[in-house]
Length: 414
Image (tube, rainbow, N blue to C red; front, side, top):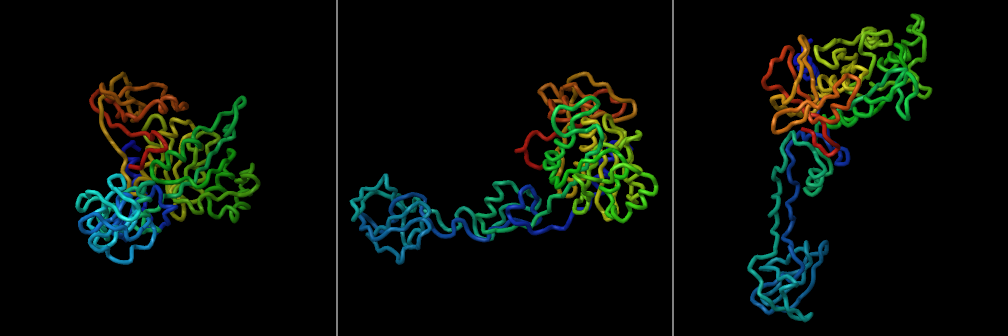
């Protein structure tokens, strides 16, 4: 399938979940499903913007009382010639005409004199935000600052599009997840980058399962009826460890809306994903993509609705496949949009005669500069890059599309 068609199929396969109310502590990173309105005015009453004296009428003034922030309002309107000592944020007594800051006041504890500017240093009710005002529109990403704003406006929970739950399954006898790999082994480079990439695209990884090669383990992990079907599968001679992780069967798809399988998506003797997908009755939507690297990728809909994304085992190929299938799915589920741009290529790139190439580049004033180190098994080039250039089959020059790459934990969802 052509690369652009595969991305479109992935986005169209996603069915956004219904909006849900989430407490503020769980809403970070979600998108608002309704306008965020102010439940209260800010400030809620007239308050002092300075430590000083709220004065009425001409001075000098007799100090009639004191009000602190968070304290009870002054019980009566000060008469002309009276002042009430106020702290920053304290309610200003009704009838006060201005606040005289300490640094401009001449006070002896009984009386105070000075030259206040009329109306100065009083924040009026609703001056910052009026009650009922819409402050953020639907689709806005809930950032840490947005959470603070929502709390200040009286909200304890928000109506949002929930972040999609993503279950990750890492396969391979040769894959180790810590330390220096021994002969014939490799460190897992895909499992560590997926949580950050998923979060950047709007989802969250809820579980990571590591499996040995073999169809039985993968079958147990992906099939909702693994326990019921296991005897039947064993009779067919699968053999090997049955989906066992630390001595128990795994079922990562029980709550996830998207399942990502790393490895096993090619057609080698240890690649069993396609056979397992067929056996559990999944609907295959994409079976291979004309892109380099990453062509042996897979997209299927599992029984019950979750989407399965099969990634190649080579790290850069897996990143390419993630940007082709996984990211469009997550963007569609959350209502996000991937930032696109175009650029000339400021360097030599060889197109593939039949497949799209994804080439790591860095943007510059001269155009997008290929950074090299772009073999399927290495993330070196992608780590140096800030985008992937989409080089069409048979490209002969001109502008190319750039796909953004996540640049850090602080980067917001688009």
